[in-house]
Image (cartoon, rainbow, N blue to C red; front, side, top):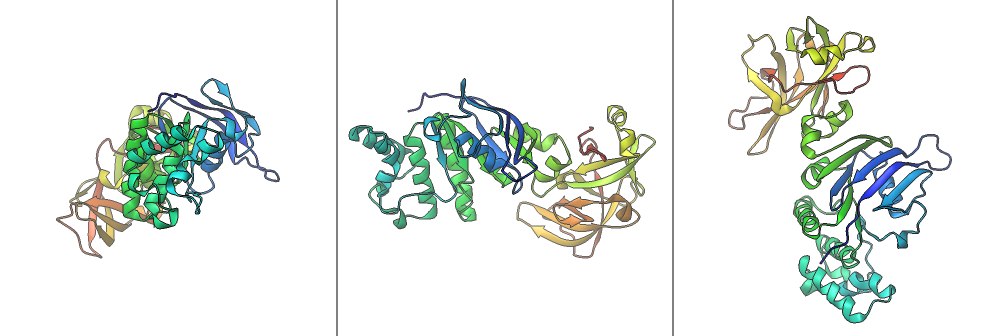
Length: 378
């Protein structure tokens, strides 16, 4: 059905809203391959929706350029960019049938009726909407309405799909289901897709690559595995992964990161990157699954008091407080808050609330960052 191909390139693209000092999107350099599914992710206000709207032509570009294929579209009208956008709130016409909603853009463009009907039926078949074509949007569920919005985009056969948090109005179960549908649909159609979400689980499960933004600045671009295994800085480390990574400050002593009595040997290359600005400290990140529960005798173990155990059937996580001399020194943060550590444990051997565990970081599974800049050292 699809043979239209296009790359997307942001070349130092900047958006500065009138009356503000800091750009909403600051010198964004990003290249999206032909047929790639790229997810823009980050917390609220990081510039991800603005970046998408700049590509759509709905926001002015105050500096730099945006290209679709080889064509500079920086000053091109939205209707002439050959893109189709799927919004969070579906944006369907309530008085029109599903078929009319899906074919409306083609009708406006003056396409022959038979051609419109054929394209609508093809899209409806892909999206399991064939039996709903004569219904009005109000007679559909949220998930079906979102599929109609997707169908309207597919029917136009654009060069690029733009999706702005299309799943955030759906309930949890439907979100998972629709997530898989969108990802497999995109693979099948092979259309270049830029997808915005604040949900990092969505980003990790759907994207070929992920671009993480913070305060309008691009932090890192890479595959979901890159993001998880080698986050470029403390922000990406704490943002990607569920539950979030534990992050603590250690002092560097005799070639090891040390806090209290716990020692983590550091590689020579890592030590060489520690600068004066770090004042003899590094930030060490360790994921909940990188911790082993051990006997208290080992030199790398640190004590954790169990506050709550989250049992998920196939998995279990302890949320606990760091104890002992470490607690005051480490400035520990995690997804559970300050001085809280998250540990993945055997779901068949769950500790009691108030119990004390000793945990140590598995060799080679610590992430080391500069305490001054937050950039990755290891």
